[in-house]
Every structure is written in structure tokens, then in C-alpha cells.
Amino acid sequence: MKLPDTSSARILVVGDVMLDRYWFGEVSRISPEAPVPVVKVERSEERPGGAANVARNIAALGAQATLLSVVGADEAGQALARLLAASSIDASLHEDPQLNTTVKLRVIGRQQQLLRIDFENWPAHEVLQAKLAEFRERIDACDAVILSDYGKGGLAHIAEMIRIAREHGKPVLVDPKGDDYARYQGATLITPNRAELREVIGRWQDEDDLAARVARLIDTLGLEALLLTRSEEGMTLYTEHETFHEPAQAREVYDVSGAGDTVIATLAVMLAAGLPLLDAMRLANRAAGIVVGKLGTATCSLEELNPD
Image 1 (tube, rainbow, N blue to C red):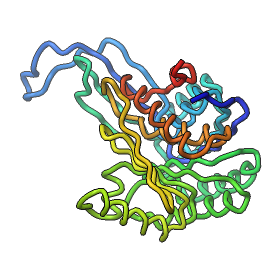
Image 2 (tube, rainbow, N blue to C red):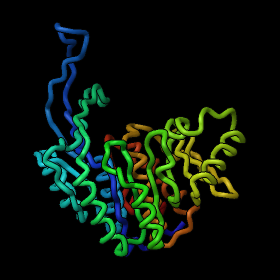
Image 3 (tube, one colour):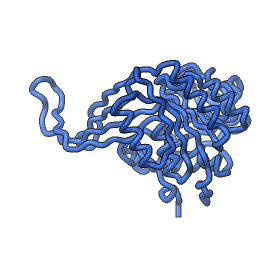
């Protein structure tokens, strides 16, 4: 499949951002204080996470990424702003003095994650209102909208954002969280994984049962499609009348963190560049297979995506 020109595709990303910190070290002994490994930290690394990683994936695919989110007035928020600027992302990060920027700290030893520590709280209502006002101002300058919901409170006005985007004729792709999908009513497409979908439609008996449950959900929410990401089983695209499945393409799975960000970013970029949904889904599946072979929240470039 020939890749489209993505350079003029403009994607507006709204959602929960976070700073992913990695501490890498050697593990040579067990602590005398408790039965846990002692990690001698030798280097550290910081990467944009959550909706910021979605924006980073968009930029890596050669498209124009605009990011709208909320951070704390703290060192982690400043670090995120620097990282995003270095990736050529137009980031509007509203500061909330009462908020601690979400940080996920991962300790890596012997090439595997030993521990993750999360620091987080919820943003204030006034800051979220200001973000909604800016969303209205920016909507016409984009080709597609991604709403990246990590359940951290940054998308309190998601239903209104979907309504505004659809009124302006923009496709809306949602990475969902939690069991209340009514808030995603009217979106173009949602991209749950198996565990997230199970929370909403319950356990399915077989593929026919799954398809019937998804069809009801699509009808109830007024969606155009649902893309189910299924890890080692690949992904399945459900539309109102058809179902398409793509097997997983990962040769070696190293780290699945951030793979969902890559999937929704690739989908949005390819749709904005003019590809049909099925072709965009196939490229998103290929991109997912590439990033799970990398450590941590990673990206897939156009060069990597090109099969030639």
C-alpha cells in the first residue's frame, strides 16, 4: 500500500497528558530489608506520555500535531513542554497551580520493568473551561480530532467537544476509558482494547456474540465504527454493516505501553491524509507491530511504516 502525503494533515489532540520517566539500572542483589531487588540506577530518561505521546506519534508520521491539555505549574509540566517543543508539536498546556502534572515513573532492570509509581490528581473546573473555549477557537484549523481519555479528569467536557467537532464537520476519534461510554455519544470512532470493551459490554461467548454486542453499542452511541485492539490477536474494525480483522504483525513484543497511542494517531493521520478507514486501520496495525518492539512509549516513523 502506497503511503499518502501526510505533511498537510492537521490533527488536534485533546486529553490527559503525563510525563513518562524511566530509571534504568543494574540488578545484582536482593535487598536485606525486604524480598525485593536492589536497582543501582545508572541513567534516566523522560518521554511525553498519554495524549502527549499521541501528539508525538502524529509528528513522527510527518503530520501537524496540535495538543491541548492541562498541566501543573511544576517541574514535570515544564519538562513536558520542553519535550513537546523539541518534537515540533504545537502544545497549548493550560497551567493549574493546584494540579500535580501526572508522572509515571518506571524502574527498569535487566531489560524489564520492575516497578511503576504514579503521581497524579485532578485539574480544576476553571482551567477546564478555558481549555474548552480554546477548543472552540482551534477546531476549524484541523482535519481531525483525537480525544485521548486516560481517566485523569482532563476531558470533563468531552461530550461538548464531540458535539462542537461534529457540528464543524470534523471526524472525532476517541481512545476511551472507564465504563461510561455514553459520554462518547456521536463520536466517529472509538478504539477500546479488550479489557476496556469488556467493562462496557460484558464478557462475550464467541466472535458472533462479540459482533452482536458491538453492533448494539455502535447503534446506541451513534458511532460510525469501533476499532477493537486485541494485542497478540491483532485488531478488528466494526462498522454498521461490516467487520474486518487484521492479525498482529509484531515479530517480538518488548513493551506494549503506548501502543494504543500509536494506533489512534496513525488512524487519524491516515484518515486526514485521505485514506479510507480500512486502509488506515491496516497501517495502524502495522505501526502497532513496530512500536511494541521498542521499550516504553515509542513512535513509528513514516520510513518504518513504508514496506518498501
